[in-house]
Amino acid sequence: MRIQSSLLALSVLLLAFASDPSARQSTREPSLKAKSALRWRRPTSETNKMVRSGENLAPTFMDDFPQPGALPIVLDGQVIGAMGVSSGDGERCAQAAIDLVFKGKATTVGR
Image (cartoon, rainbow, N blue to C red; front, top):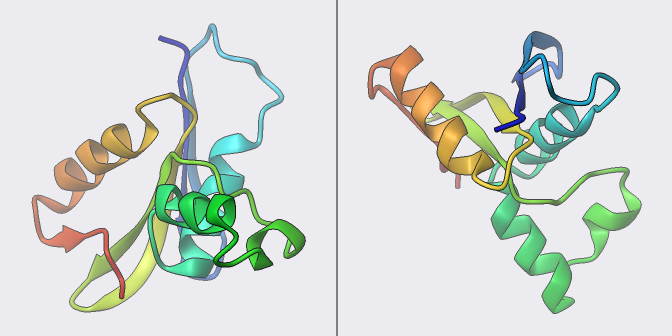
């Protein structure tokens, strides 16, 4: 599986970027997804559904990338960052990484 991932801090500072050697080298997709999850404080799959239904079109003109694959990271009730992954199973991969790093102490729903 060709996969890339980005981890952003609350300040939208890129903390880490990992890429499978066979993945496209120029993609910014994981970082853009993570930025969207961080801004909207929800999984990008939820934001995508809101955009597609017409409920909220703001992400489309706010330079966001509301495509599934990123989750906000919530620790002690505060959104501290987000993780985006460029695969079809991006949110599941992001959740697994968040669980591993935070040992189950972080959640991914900030509302």
